[in-house]
Image (tube, rainbow, N blue to C red; front, side, top):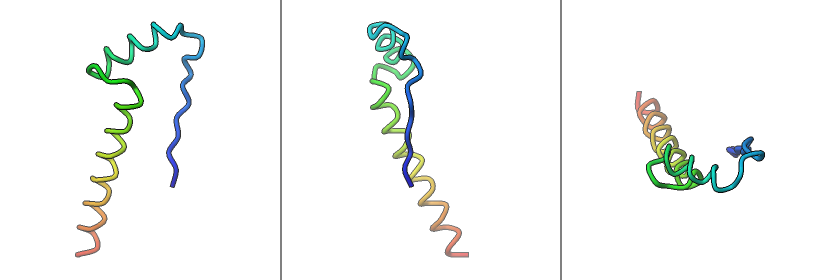
Amino acid sequence: MTESWTDDRRAWPDAVAHAFDRTVTGGRTFAEFQVRNIEITLRNLKRELEAASRM
């Protein structure tokens, strides 16, 4: 499985996009923020699948 994302903010000036990212992600870049979100999702998915296989 591959997850991808397209940044539809291409019309935004880079400085505005970077400032927005750092504001809404708690100081991280959007890419760093998404890597953390993907790691959490995969960890939760693994936990749920392992729990289901024990039933």
